[in-house]
Length: 477
Image 1 (tube, rainbow, N blue to C red):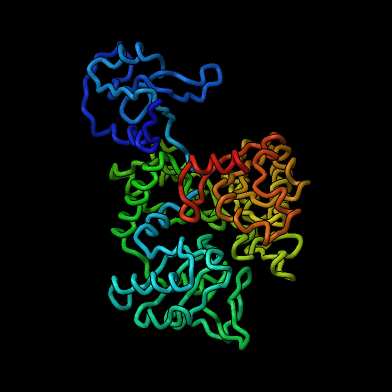
Image 2: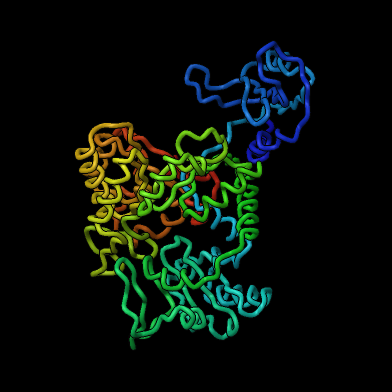
């Protein structure tokens, strides 16, 4: 059987807006603009899981059925014979960092740098392509690929004498600054750690250039803000990139700045990816007022391409940065149990306030202690505020204590998970948390068997936005 590349088929609905057709259709039916026939079409309908053909009207699926039926409905519209290829609707990725991902496509590429020498060489070569004084950002390096030694500023200072460098670990919870960037940010040995963050220091007390979680804000605030035109180009690049993976809708975990970019594109008719945006949890009062005003595609909007859907918060950091919050220390870092980037008291105040205002809340939790803490807060909030159609979500739900798995269904909490992390983190997670805790890591089947609602996403830019690879990771877990 011939198999047309799935990503190519996913692009078809996105291109329909520029197609002109005037097919013959029954009165009241949508005007068919494209028909795909002689295919295996996955419908999502348990009573008819597959069909032979699908008809599209503009950017919407209008009909599914037999090849004969769809050919008849198509009239003069274009008909493509897929020769038995498999077709699915566009994928929804429930966790991305969309604008950041777009910028990453044009930044220094370090994700697969497998040696210290290659890491340094790529930064040096990229620095030679941008004007002096330009900040070098992005990167998404993974120190586990070269044996686990964390990079330091002295690795890259000599090759970036006229460029501030601020490059993230791939999980976004730790980043490396060169000496130029540290000077601009005022980070020196006498600067104290921030609550929920850490400045990594050498044996003499000097910063190595690595900052974790909340401490990253010391440098983030000094990186020049991109222009609107640059942000628009990043959005365009992101939309093109995910379309090639078959993704047509994303849940963006981002900022109010991202909202401005999406709103600008939506008003101009430029969006080719549907956007469900989450904004910072601590800004819940701003979102409450935005919803009341009916702006930015918030509740009540009829914009089919963009709306603000939720508030995004954080409990802890990440496994790879050793900042995920666990009950017991990391196996490879005795004495370190991770950290909470926000206090339970602050989280409860924000979540409870947002919930009283009728807003949806999604919160990042990686470690078992972080997930249990968040489930406790969700349970307390629901008891305080009473029943309603709430959609509490835990983003990642990555490492769970066995006793907490049934709590998801009991409390109606959605586990929003990114199965590709079973591929990337999975390479070394057992070494970090040991053979016992790994049993309830990436617990997709256990959660489903416990009747929890599970949603899948990618966490792009942290992981690639490739749904089929994510599904493979979940099935083969």
